[in-house]
Image (cartoon, rainbow, N blue to C red; front, side, top):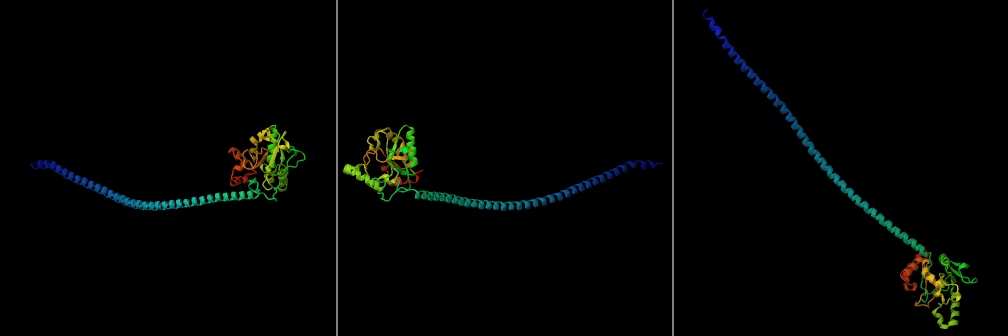
Length: 313
């Protein structure tokens, strides 16, 4: 009966030891589990790191390849831009050549047209014939037109004028009449032979003094068919005092608008003052002379020739 209590007292001690051993085993299990989890995490992390590192390296390679490709493309683009710029420069050069050629062609065409126009205009029409140039006995204007009876002095007087001048003369005399100024043609075209007769008659009447107002044959502007002697009522064929008439005043103020100029103004070096003697030189030259307050024979012949092409414009 005495041994039983001791066996009973040792049971708690075993239980305590058993619990400690269980606790150790649990702790070891926990540690082992923790290590396993850590190992697993490290394993997964390592795998992911390697995978990401591999991708990073791959992306790095792709990036380098892409940059190289872009660099190559950039160089190619730059080369293309250079070639494009060169082509544009060549194109601009060719375009300029074409434009220059077009201008040259236009100038040549204009020159050809001018030469063709000049070839159809009588080169004698603006020559300074009064004691300067000689007009041969065979010269006759290309075409002559009879002055209408309404605008000539004397019904029996046959007056002709260069056909291309007639429209200008008709307009001038008509406009003068509208202004209540009556101006008439007393004489127009004279042939070489007719001028010889006129000069001979004047020499008979006035002797050498005729040279002051009458041209020798071949030196008369009348042979050109572009020149007229004009008169008005109260003056008639005598012409004395024409410079004091309203007709002369009107001509001074308006004749240039129709292409007519006074050939022999006061103080000229060729003949006496002839206020009735008017020559057609074309509107452009007549207006220039009026504007510059000059007379036809004041100009050099070369300067006058520059107006020939526009004489009937």
